[in-house]
Length: 96
Image (tube, rainbow, N blue to C red; front, top):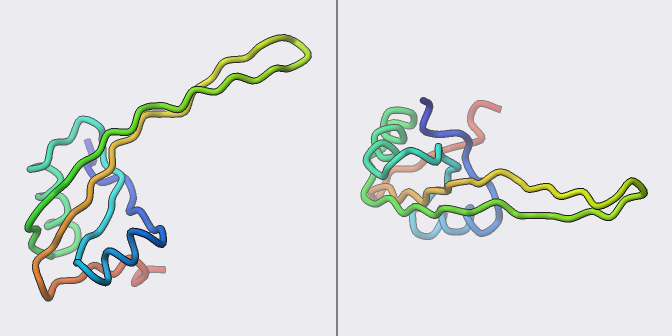
């Protein structure tokens, strides 16, 4: 099970990383805060102070087509906001 799936790169998270040393990740829904902390420290070589997690449920959609009503949903996702210690940074753009 890989804990970190991908980093969140949005305007809001990028501004929070520049001001408060907080970075966002989409993580495995079964991972707990200790596993997320260890995965970020191992992957990026920083020390983590705090981990906040959020579970987002699936979005359900209904489409009306010629053949009838189709129901669908997106996947549920878990996000983690990781605060690193003062002076440490994570550069997501270094390997592009």
